[in-house]
Image (cartoon, rainbow, N blue to C red; front, side):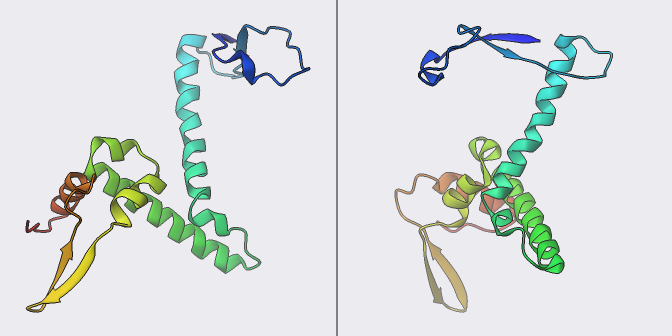
Length: 150
């Protein structure tokens, strides 16, 4: 059992008294031979997958379940592929985006406020002048082997 000091006592609903109002208690049940100091970091590592599931449910997995097994399989495959590519792009862009959720990466680096122009058989991407994420986008663009013309 782990005891943590409650930082926000107003989070307890009115009329529901607590047995231990100052402390929050976290119980970890495990059959491993580790002591608490060793078991807790392992437990926290397992909790990271819950963040991945929440991230996926905020994007493509929101379409599940469908009435068709093949549609569910397709959505799951596309969701996993999009998640992994977006996370890889975040790692290439910046330290901030390496830890950001995929929705943030999509908002900052994929759904970019740019204008596409064509000329001399080339596509030109015109980015805003004072765009906050331009350096991160440039890092992502050059990390993928593209040439950035300023």
